[in-house]
Structure formats: C-alpha cells, structure tokens
Amino acid sequence: MNATKSENAFSFADTLNGENEFDSDEDDFESENEIEFENEIEFENETEFENENSGEPAPSFSTGKVKKKIIEVKDLDLWYGNNHALKNISIGIPKNKVFAFIGPSGCGKSTFLRTMNRMNDMISNCRIEGEIYIDNENIYAKETDVNDLRKRVGMVFQKANPFPMSIYDNVAYGPRIHGVSKKKIPGIVEESLKGAALWKEVKDRLKDSAFSLSGGQQQRLCIARTLAVKPEIILFDEPCSALDPISTRKIEELITKLKKEYTIIIVTHNMQQAARISDYTAFFLSGELVETGKTVHIFENPQDERTEGYITGRFG
Amino acid sequence: MSGQNQTPEKGKTEKNRTEKLMKRNTAYKKRQNLYQKIAFSLMRLAVVVTMAVLIIIIGDIILKGYPAISIGFLTQMPTNQMTEGGILPAIVGTIQLVILSLLVAVPLGIITAVYLAEYAADGKVKRIIEQAVNNLAGTPSVVFGLFGMALFVMYLGLPLSLLTASLTMGLLIMPVIIRTAQEALIAVPKEYREASAALGVTKWETIRRVILPSAFSGMITGIIISTGRAAGETAPILFTGAVFFYPRLPDSVFSPFMALSYHLFVMATESINIELTREIQYGTALVLLAIVFSMNLIAVGIRRHYKKKSFSSH
Image 1 (cartoon, chains in turn orange, cyan):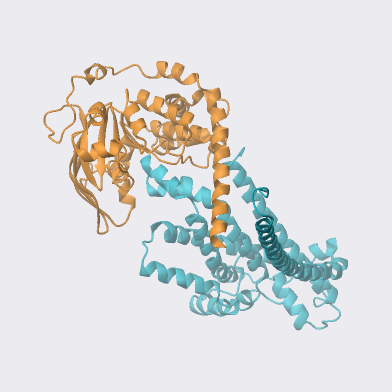
Image 2: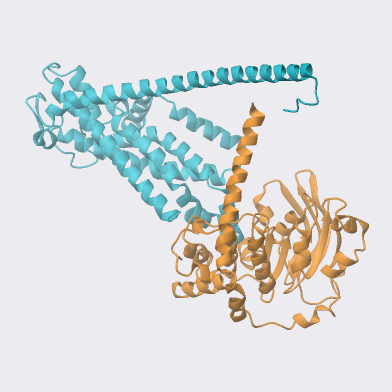
C-alpha cells in the first residue's frame, strides 16, 4: 500500500517537473539570440591571460612556480564529526580561469567548494585544519571577517534560490545591505542583470516576483544577485543540475564570458560540461584530490588510472 | 485470443482462470470502494456535526442577541444597575485589553521565537525552554489570573487596572505566539539563509530582511488565535483589573475597566435580575463575537496583503 502510494507521488512530481521544464524551454527560446549581443558590451578588459593559455604550466601542488594564483589551498583537512571528508588537499586556483571540480557523488568536491567562502561555518559539527589563501590572505585566520570574505567570494547554488521578493529587490539585496548609496543601486541592478544575460528578458517586469521566472531565468537571477556585490571569485555548485539543456547551455555560455572578469570554480557532475567550459579540472575521489591539471590534459591524457576510470565511465 | 493453435480445453481453462481473476479483482475493487465510501461518509459526518454545532451556537446568539443591538446599546453607559442602557465601556475595555495584551505579547513572543529558531543551539537548554513554552500554552487561564494577581498586584504593587490585566493576558497568549512564530521561522527554506550568507550578509540582517518577512504570514496566524483568546478569556482579568461596574471609559491604563467577557459572566450569574437581562446578555455575546471576528478579518487582510506583496504575479 505504502509503496504504491509513494510511487504515485513520485510520478506525479515527475510530471510536474516535466511541465516546468517545458515551460522554461519556451521562455528561454525567445531570448536565445540576446545573450551574445549583450556580452560584447559587458566585458572588454583583461584579455592578458587569454593568450597565455598554452604557455602557462598546469597548476601544481608547488605554490611558488606559478604566478597569478588567486587561491592557494595548503594541506586542507575537513571533518564532519568523525567523518574525514577532505584529506590533505593542496591546490592552486589561477585567476580569471574556469576551474572545474569533478568526481562521483560524496567525493567531497562540493564540500571543498564550500570551504572557499566558509559556508561550512554554518554546519555545526564541521572542523577544518589547514590553510586557504585568497590573495595571500588566510581566510581561516582569526582576524578574517567571514562576511567580507563572502562578498569577495560569491556563490551560486545547485537549486536556484531567489528570495521571495521582486526581481529588482533580489539583485538590489546585497548592495543595499552593504550600504551602497541609493543612487547607485539602479545602475548596479541593471549592470548585474546584463552581466547575467537576463536584462533583456526582465527589464520590463523588474517589479514582478522572482518566482514568476522560469528555472533557468531564476538561476541567472541568482548569478546577477551574486554579481551585484562585485565578487572576485564565483563558486558554482552544480548550477545546471536542475535545468533543461537549453538553460544549461545559456549558463555555460555565461560562465565562459564571466571568466574575463571573475575567477570561476564550478562543481559539476557532468563531465561533458567540465570539458566544454573549464580551463582546469580537478578530480576528487573519497575526499582526496586525485589529479589536477589543464582540462585537456585531464580528459585526454590522465596520469592517474582512477581519473581515467572515472572519465571513461568505468565507475562513478 | 490465441485460441486457434491450442486445444479447446486449454483455451477453456485459460478463459476460466482469467474470469476467476477478473471476478476476484472486481470483488476486491468493490470492497475497496465500499471502504472508501464508509471512510468518506464518516469524514463528512464529522464535518457536518462540527459545522452544525458552530451554526447552532452562532445562530442562537444572533437570533437572541440581535433584538438587543441598537445604536444606544453600543454607545451608551449601562444604567439602572445594568438592567438597561448600553455596554460601551465593556466594548472599549475589551478592545483596549486586546490591543495592549498584543503589544505585550507579540514583540516578546516573536523575539523569543527568533532566539529559539535562529540562535539557540540545539541542546538541553533549548529543549527545556521549548517544553516550558508548551506547558505554558496548556496552563489553565485561571492559573494565569492568579499568577498575574500575585506578581503584578501583590508583589509589584500595581493597581487593579487595564495595564495589569493586559500584562496578565499578554502572558497567557505569549506561548501560542512563540510556538506559531517559531514554526513559521523554521518553515522558511534553508536556501534563503544560504543565499543570503553567501552574499556576505550577517545573520541578523538575513533574519531582518528575508527570514522575518517570509515567516510573517505564518506568525499572523498565531496572532489571530491570540486575539480571539485575549478578547474571550475571563479568568485572567477577573483578579487583575476587570470590574463589575465602571460606567466610564478608562482614562488611563491605571484605571479599572469593564470587559465584554466579564460583563457577560456577571450578567449571567450574579446580576440582580438574570432573567430580565437575558437580552442584554445575548447582545453582549453577539458584540463580543463580532469584535473577535472583525479582528480576525483584519489580520487575514494583513496576511493576504503581505503575501501578495512578496509573491506577486505568481
């Protein structure tokens, strides 16, 4: 009796999801061509790293060699209670690149992502040892203000999580609280929505509830909300896992464009996605960092056989 | 279906089996349908009984109280030892009592709920506080009345007054407000907290700007329940400030006052001529009902307005 019941509920939810996706497909289709156009205006500076792609050595555990590492992680260990969730992780994240974390579920990649803006602080039985330097500043030092850190290191979540407010208020939320003068807020909102390739779709309905947007639009709204506090680094925690393919492609295009201004770290289950959009990839397995390097190297010529096994689909 | 290649006998047995299965199936279905019908009938009956009781009570009060209602009844002082005249001081007293006790209980209750839901670490202390709140919510109102008298009147030396009664009534309704507000806060999705924290927003700002507005409509529910209780409860004000006869409007919170609930109680049990004032009693009950009802309406209106504001164009 129970089993049937839950099955029914499940299929019902599936149907609902299906419908939603269909809806968002339509929405997104209409605005397809607008993205390209907008981003040309938005990002023009900082092209210096672009050309160095091939010459730059892959990030390695040795920290001294490579310049322009915006994040340096040294010997990071993390426990949830007695569960040793991250084991002795050291990694460098280069500036203005897309860095992908891949690995099977429960391998610690999301946990690791969350150490970088100290979202793990919100979990009571979480304990961390080791150091993470952002711009040569240890973010786990006592004098670090966690809210300042999170302003610099923005985060976009798996499930789009707009606030129950208007589209405008969602984007204005951060700057308002951080004391940006009232005059500047409309400009920031517009700029951020443009940055997230959403402006064209919502500019006539800024006062509407954020929940009136499709799933993909909501996720871009969350990106706009993050951009509005002007971070240097943006963490993406499986941002497309709840989205349909078209919305996913939009977010991917957006991420590729955002890296000109921001350093991007993305956790993804989708290896094609990692291959498509990232410059560097790190492979995690049971709390360990197995291998890291340029995405092309990781995917075409993995050094560790576990990496190879995962990438070729033998497990995970 | 595939009878041609098979022997007729085999076809027959198969047909029999199918028929049997179908029969069993229909019998099963019939039984299930019957059970369902019985269950639904019982539920309907329960609803009908509840509604009937409610309608009878309200109808009785309206029918018997309506003749007493007049402009004079609503706007005049009681006269002739309360057998004639109006009930204005009791109306005003009740409204003042409700507003003042909400002023006491809502801020305190919501602050307590925020502490319990957002700040207090899970553990023994929190469990003890929560259990205490639950127990307070179930404490008989007459105990609150006696406690109010002991604390505010005898210990702190406050006069028997509107203020003292409101403080006592505030204590009575606070547990319900705490519980409902806490539930409303807990129901706010975790995602909002995470999203806000990830923007570098402090916990307090997050609570103020996101959590409290989201929980607001749930909190109103507790306040609605409390409004009705504050207007209707008699025991807490019995010892703390409500009086039998005070044919003036209270000029300050330190003066005694009349309240509809207490007025009704006195008229129905202790007045000089209970039978003679029957109509006034029903009229008073009707006014009390109307006040509680309209206060609820206002609260529902606030809630709807607020919901619309945050979830517009859904």
